[in-house]
Length: 101
Image (cartoon, rainbow, N blue to C red):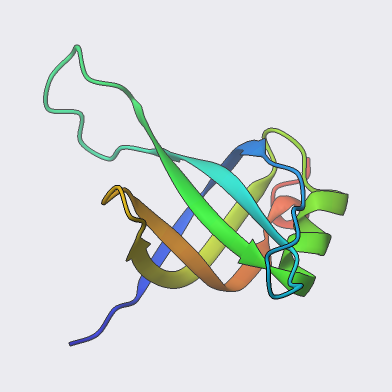
């Protein structure tokens, strides 16, 4: 089976860069992704997807991204001990330069 996903959206929240027990820097970015087909008028218009960034992508995202920055993420889906799904980033594209007016 293949575990691969791609999302594009806007940064909603960027958390601080903690160091793991193995000495790696990590951060979590919450990406706001617009739903294509809201079936119910009362449903949220956006999904909020947590994305885990390691080392260099984490440093870069923390230094240049702010709320509303546009990102594309390619990664894999994982879950934590509480069965909450997250995406582990394998590739990140900073898309703000493509949307400048």
